[in-house]
Image 1 (cartoon, chains in turn green, red, yellow, orange):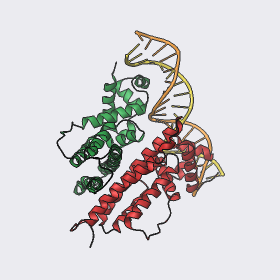
Image 2 (cartoon, protein in one colour; image 1 turned 180 degrees about the vertical axis):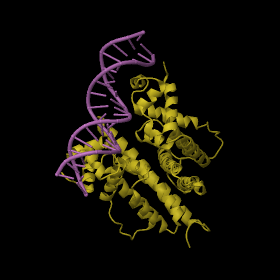
Image 3 (cartoon, chains in turn blue, purple, brown, red; image 1 turned 90 degrees about the vertical axis):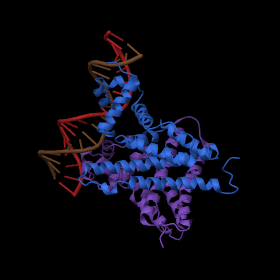
Image 4 (spheres, protein in one colour; image 1 turned 180 degrees about the horizontal axis):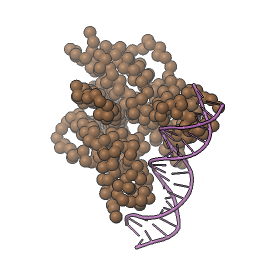
Length: 196
Length: 196
DNA sequence: ACCTGAACACCGTTCAAGT
DNA sequence: ACCTGAACACCGTTCAAGT
């Protein structure tokens, strides 16, 4: 069989969702495609590069173009929720995305869109990048935690139904702390940070 | 040779700092101690448990008891910087600590101390935990990024000396956004969050 | 351009057996 | 209590060779 890059990414997404990140090996992906492991290295220079492509694919599937009429803070909140939903939609999605981001590949779309939203509030590029990274680190960390505990509960016997909304609540709380911190710099009279 | 748990942790810290997280394998640690790999399983149930002990050891080495006379926000900032310094003091320290925290083990000391500082500002336990996690996720994410890029630069030929302080600057900025967000809830008149 | 086959240098973990 | 020896079931990556 002869495959293209995107066919391999699609099968990798399947392996991730069905068997988890621990089982997402080059050998496993190759086997499910009926290929030798070495064949994957025709399409990707390394496993890291393949994982980056898988992470980007997850985020693209869960992302729609921005309407563009909202205020900067509503956009930051909306982008963060979209990111969270995209990662929660696949098994180990958050851990994969966080891992890929940790080794400095992929996941550039979300950070650029977050930074653009902050910049539209009137902040300079440097501040906007730093603020966007603060939001992004929170989102990755929080959703990784959520997903770890969700999956731990789903393995065990006890149903965590009464706690169902606690993830979203604490996500919104942490996110609002950061957004409020940004907004405060906007309101501060005589601040040097906001543009003209 | 006959070793105790702490001897193995100490050697693992050495392997981490000298060879990096990728080379921190059970077989490597065992070999450096002159043991069979299987011997380690007398002291630790799994590699994850050993890594958790290594992460806790790094944090203990970089942590001193709090003086206890500072304001809540100064304590949050001081604890965050202490945590950052502790992780930066060892090769791949941030990635290790973040990984251990991601699979739900160890690293409880820092989150408890952060939550205690927020609680002393007058917030309830639930808010304090959520605020502490927000700080912690930011710290782990930011310092992992810093360390990845520092090490990437140290491998390459170009010295990043002029950029030396940019990590600390953006760390302080992101941290202050979150602390300001917490403080704002304290100042808000008629808020239900702060305690009597 | 895309893949096979075979090899290299590794992994984490288990378990009977030794002292 | 602590360790050995041997095995099981895997890894990522390289590379000459095939079509």
